[in-house]
Length: 103
Image (cartoon, rainbow, N blue to C red; front, side):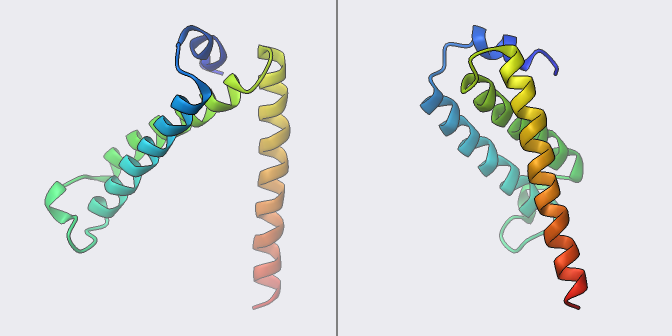
């Protein structure tokens, strides 16, 4: 997927450095959301939903690179990505169904 595994292998960051980068990207995403939604104290940054999308993509790429670095091979990365996304989305769907059933 977008050569993330290969790019991760070429990037010298440690797993710890990559996790810290993810935290940084999450902070930038939060800033963009606060600004785009005109949260008090954040309006001056004048960020838009386009900025939110860009920061979300940055965070997603770094998160996937963490998964890639924690995988022994491209095949394991792809298999784990598919397995985990299916399981996590199914769990999310289940929670949404429980919430709607309880209303």
